[in-house]
Image (cartoon, rainbow, N blue to C red):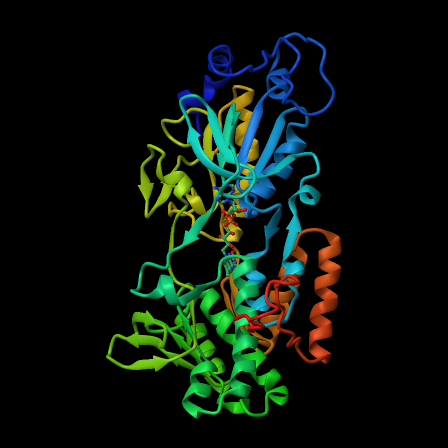
Length: 481
Ligand SMILES: Cc1cc2nc3c(=O)[nH]c(=O)nc-3n(C[C@H](O)[C@H](O)[C@H](O)COP(=O)(O)OP(=O)(O)OC[C@H]3O[C@@H](n4cnc5c(N)ncnc54)[C@H](O)[C@@H]3O)c2cc1C
């Protein structure tokens, strides 16, 4: 059912011109566009719906799945609008493959795609947005790290696609001692940490110390936790022959508070995953809570302690601080938006992806924070922004998810696709095929395909990448961990 545009969105063009007079030099639809507009300067034309879109300044904050796709679609739909993408990184991170970076199955460069190549018609600015003034319709940002000067940009339409953050405050000690898995940097750091621990273990003489160095605890038995535990386990098995003193001592423990792994999937698939992981040597602890983390390992709810030199946290998210200051109702930290993804009470502001609680007209639930939903929301939001600029009613988001898949290590996966529960090698092929199809840009698809095949026939890369520059460690010579 079409959803009527909210008063704030239907009247946006009219109000935009009033605001332009007060705050920023916003072009009238009857004049040439402002200097901010992309492309050649337009001649004055009669007012019309397309002309109003031509001079519209659309800012998108966040170059993740939601923001990057939205930018690409919007720039095609509104080729004469000034669409800008403001993002911390100049690339999109393909998060579902981060666990493979940890397990050295793929190179970090193959799970990212440069935003300028993904959305060539969009102006990409690699900046940190620091504040939003919704009444003045202005966004503030820093361009050179945390100490750079603050600059600002006016907007007519603003889209929040800034995702969420890892929440390491759920368990005492986690922020100080556990490693999150949310960014390429996290994945690379983890990969390096694992290899560094193996190297240190080869030098250690005390068996307890050796055991501690090569014990890896993963907290959280959801998709990320299962995938990363499976990848680390595979990597440790494959690396054994180069670390003869460490060899079979290495240990991976997966802690999960629920009764079965992968709670988003049917229990049968969770049990299958548990069995497969155990067979590969992963110790799974179900219905177990991680109570505390410290420099020596983790403390469990039943009083047991697991000594481990590396603790990986895959649980908990918190809202992006950028959205916290906005006077908007929230649902579990996410911005509560309308069905058309407009932010209530803030004219011309929209939100999608992980930072927004978008109602799904199909089933009436709130969309889960997954890439699958972020990618589907983006084209509809592009259409809704276009409709709003033309004074047409917007439409609510409705999507029926087709399935869920998780790779569980050693060329196995579990999936629920079109109502069918699948487990084993076939869903693993499906998993790879699906991601290969969806990884952005043809060049990356080819590289990923070659690398996956390469990894099936050749040993994993155990190079410990050091990021130390010449002269920085001439005295210390420490191995980074
Ligand atoms: C390890 C891992 C595995 C996952 N696996 C799956 C999976 O298999 N299937 C699935 O569907 N989902 C998966 N997800 C979830 C999925 O990645 C998210 O749902 C998806 O990334 C949400 O997209 P988004 O665009 O809303 O946010 P994000 O992709 O998080 O993007 C947010 C963007 O905002 C930018 N940003 C943030 N703050 C600022 C600021 N102040 N200024 C400028 N830019 C800013 C960031 O740089 C980033 O570009 C996984 C997530 C992780 C971490």
